[in-house]
Length: 156
Length: 180
Image (cartoon, rainbow over all chains, first blue to last red):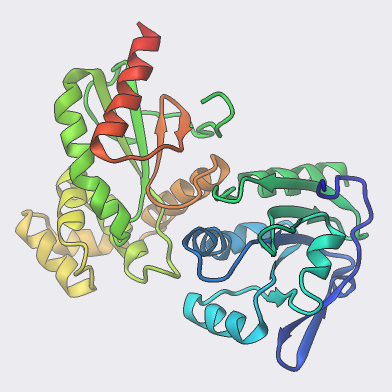
């Protein structure tokens, strides 16, 4: 299954960010969104990737953009992980039904039961403007995201 | 190597470098003084420099991960401030050798040990010029696809391989063979 490509409407979703709060993609209309699917909390590569986005957040925000992380880990796992790593963006739990949102974006790995390492840049109207599927073991960095946001700015 | 991200900020005279300016091999490291992996890479790079001699130019740029390493940004600024007193590499080496103690007080001790004017150094650390330098390194690194620390670039292309001594040396020698 291929990940959703640029030009596609980003499927809306609502997932828990804490035990009693949910975050919906539609809340971000009018803003650009960097949607980050990653396979699992605590694995060293993910930590590095999200840690990088945490540091790069001020650069991303300059493009009127917010970062949202998504994995299939449960919400209590996310809470510990966020607290430990001091992430300043929400990470959402695609836990029940497992991987439902990852599947909507074509970013689910059936065999492993986790999401892919996939990036989507979604514009203020909810259209995917850039997507990238990274090999699971490779930290894709932030250059692709920033290039995509830069192109978005030029187009508008 | 053709698909790997490219260095967006070319190596220039503003960079801190060791080795001949026109060396056929240019190794750029984006590093963080408080990052244990960079600490591990530090003696490896030294050995690589020794092995390749005049064929290698080594450049160090700042990529402090402030959230994970609370002392990293300040350490980077101290090294840049030491550069203004022509002691960048002395401070760079000191910081990696003492990377588990990078609190403000220790940094002052290291500066004194290196014979720096500590008062001047502290003044420089607080300036916009030094802060901007560290930030510009970081932003340029992000743009070039730096995805963690250390990240190496060999002649402008990101090196994604293992960077233990034997493998990194082999990669550099392979690049050299291609050039000649």
